[in-house]
Length: 361
Ligand code: TLP
Image (tube, rainbow, N blue to C red; front, top):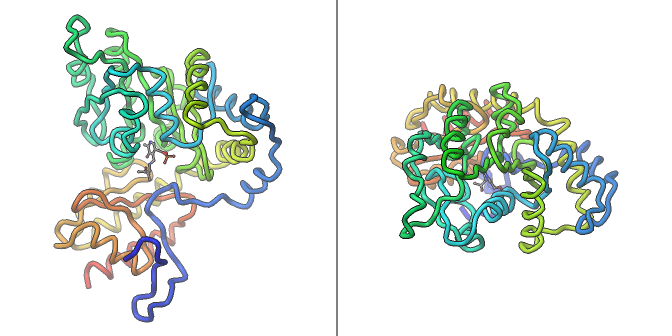
């Protein structure tokens, strides 16, 4: 089905009234209360540093993560890219897990804009071991090599199915980084999911990283924006690159107000998304043709395999779309469902019923 077409009722070819959209936690729409906060936001020209709402958001995130400074940016991609650019020089190397977002889904920007190359490591659901990382670090004494400058970690790990990066593993990796004088960046697009699921505070994770990026427009439900945090010197340099990348926004307080609202009202409720993801996983795992271990679900992402249906993931996703349930697919047989603010437990139960009907009929 054409992606632009609305899902239709199969028999009558009429547009479906209800769609259960599990493609991503990015699809949420701002709630009425969030919209009110946006309308009422105090604004100024943020390129002059004069937007009170942006400044308040930056201060809030700096405090939350225990960093000297923070910077509001347009997207998670921009956040990661500014951090990678700021930590490196062209011709240097960045160690990253093979399924990580900057390597797979940021349009080649780390190569194009920062001029770095990645050294990828295959982790276990996105989790690399300290020993694997240490082995990947290039010797500084031999100029054949691109010097290693940065280690990137993703928590939770998207392609790892929302896997939480164990804190003790992060601590081990930090020791390796310190031994070699290498910086660490945390892609914390869904850091708050990890925090809510474990009870570990954002600051406890963040202390092991030189830079952290968190997304406001994933599970937190804001329409736009991410925030990066680090030392004052680091953020000052990233601020220069943000301007260079065209990310200097003017009355951005309208957007920052949504982020502030999200941090104040939408963090604790992530527990509901995690519960719904477990319900989704348990339901899907009982359906013929689906392979999924429901116990592997730790946060709001559910990845499952449909090879045994005899159809590709694209075909299965297309079929389900016709029945009003949207999933994403990657690879030939892998699919992803993500729970979020705009789907209820009832929606999840309904989605499972629909998948069952479609796949088992
Ligand atoms: N992830 C999106 C897609 O791009 C795959 C999604 O639907 O999950 N880091 C991580 C871990 C992410 O999952 C994403 C977005 C980003 C960074 C980038 O954020 P945006 O989309 O705001 O640039």
